[in-house]
Image (cartoon, rainbow, N blue to C red; front, top):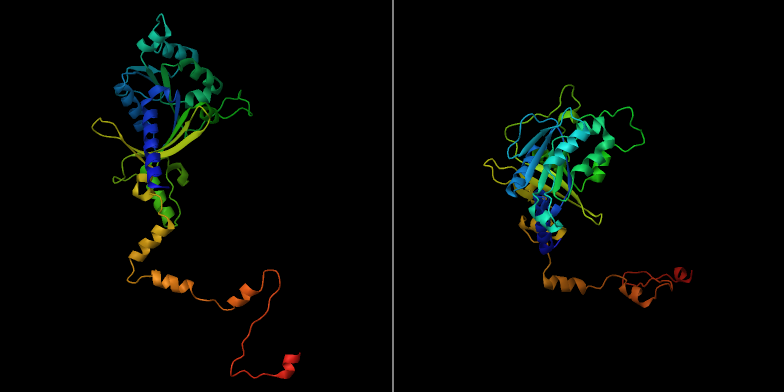
Amino acid sequence: MAPSAQTHHRSHSLLLFQKLLNLRDSASPLTLILDTLEQGAGPLLQEFINRGKLARSKILFVSFTTARKPRNVDIFIKARGKSVTALITEIASHCAPVNSQTPKDTATNSQKCLIVVDSLNPLASKQPHVLPLFFGSIINPFASLVAVYHNDVPLVLPRTVNEYEPHPLTLLSHMATAIFKVSSLYQAVETKRAQMRSLREPEWGLHEGREGVLVGLRTGHQPEGLVVEMEMRRRSGRAVAERFILSPSRGGAGASLSLLSDHPLFAPAKDAEGGAEGEMADTTFNLGLTEKQRNDREGIVLPYFDAQTEVGGGEGGRILYDMGREDDFDEEEDEI
């Protein structure tokens, strides 16, 4: 990729990622975050909340597993034990648009609302068929939804679910307009190092296959940050995919964003010519050819070159042989 095209692609990807985080111009009405035990979605959720607070949006936090109200949240709703109808009514009461005489006044006076759901697993496990109704009832032009689904949590479906119905995760992935899959930066770096050395890729947590191990061992020298795999669906149906590194800040400022390809370990390999020049730079001799040597090589006449030019293609061939002084001419053999 040319340097100009690579720079344009990098800038476009970062701007698109920031647009999704800011939820500007209703970029993604339904954002789905997939996390695991190894890397939770907490830092990414907090980044959504912080940016929504800076944009003066109303932040609603629907809690299924969170006990305390997070920072910068305006309304904290405890959803555990409530029916879906009661939950929809409570959420809609806080995100109702201001009634005005004209639609233009309604769009001007209404405050944007960001709805954050910390876990969709309880809804997907008990009543998976109500997920489309739940999303359609609370999402409107003035409200965007960011929801988390835990991949490692076993999902026990009720017996009333038909075996031919799609899995709740498949249904969520189909309805979401943007999907973020988070993973550990430390684990991605260690996996990449193992691939470069042709070693077996390390595994952590549940994938280790050890009894009683749920989360992998963590050291104090792990790099801060997480890898975010973005998949955004445009209105045309085309998907845009990219991988980023999100490094949360401790001082409360915005998190730093960068492409995963900007990491030294994940940088794309150079082309063959550049790699050859780099290898030759480390040698004490030159393997290249000068202009005079290149011209002399092109002027060399190869053996049997006359036979290749005189005899046309497809007309057969012949052997041209010039007898030397030391050759013994035998008339009998020549007559055979």
